[in-house]
Image (tube, rainbow, N blue to C red; front, side, top):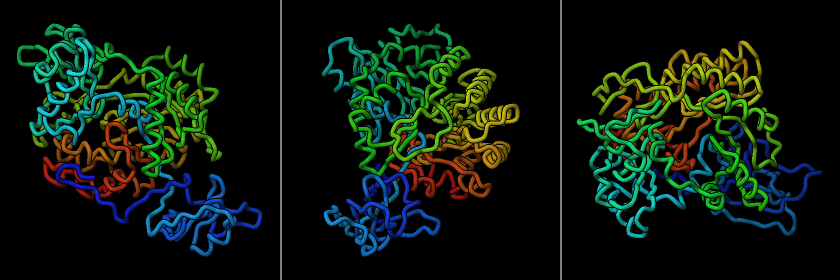
Length: 519
């Protein structure tokens, strides 16, 4: 797959036949009491990821269980006479690959029903305008055009699109195009009018309306300001969501992916998952996080409705849908420069966005209270935390909750955890080792897919410590990678590569703005 001037290269014609969540427990030969294999894969490179990091030749399965990993001969000995035999011809088999943070249901639906304005479909604002114009030609006047995926760092013009850009393409249709991170987007003038967004509209709480020199809105809406327009965009019905889930399951399986954590699901989405599962079509394991709300009343309702089914979870190997916990937000985006920092954001690496430290997406004290409520209820919590100040607040909140009400094994998470401070890293290490909590859930692909925007916004010093995987390893910190799909492509091979290479897609600010020290 080619993306601009940079290319991710597979090393060994990677097949990613994900045959089980893990090969760790597989044995070289089946015990006498074990069933005979009904499927064997031979003549391959089987990456066991066991303690010795063995590369085997073949693998045997009985039903959905791996019963043997070893040589062709060893595997053949445990095969039933009528076992199906697949000759891998040197291709690679991996354990089932997991995604610790993927907007699976929403992203699957978007793939089918939202206008694609992502790279490489669009490479310029002119391409965005052309895509919107073509879509408008298929719709009646007044019908909404919803799109997603643009990223100013990948656009030829290296700037944000505006309402003015979109107006000529669709003067009679309201348009809202969400940036790839989901934390900001651009509306045309008709959409702004319908949302009553004018020169006199104040910024809403935890939101920003970008403005021209005369105070009029540019069309770009960030964080909470998006709701001024997005609330008017027609929502998806359960049928659309069901189609999206069924489609994305197949796409995940094609990449060897067998499990994921879907953050922020609703009751309607949960019911749709159950419907797909009832049809035996949910061929991935889904660990769902409920949208935790932004106030105490919402948290109380969620605890009453879901706490009994949401508890520390240990897989039995046969569950496909798990009520896993709760997702909260403490800050915004590195793309929008809304994530909560101690210092000013940068512009174009060396410039300074003076006075802009980002901001909390909710009252920090309220977030701390919600964390404590869910913690006390025995529910796992993961908090979206990108900026250094946001991460400190999240891990300190976990620390306070653990000291006042020790509950080992809830495995609270730090979603994204882009630039943790030394303080945060020390607290994370301690909580992991003593309370089985505070697990970073970063997205390695941010330095690649978002890298040409991130490098400019974070600046040189912060970029060097973005996604500090080497430091995590040196401190004994465990972390789980997530694509944040649809923010970045979901294929796990990209995340594995990006964690090591740390290369931006196009190299707008050079090919190595993040360095290799933290690979």
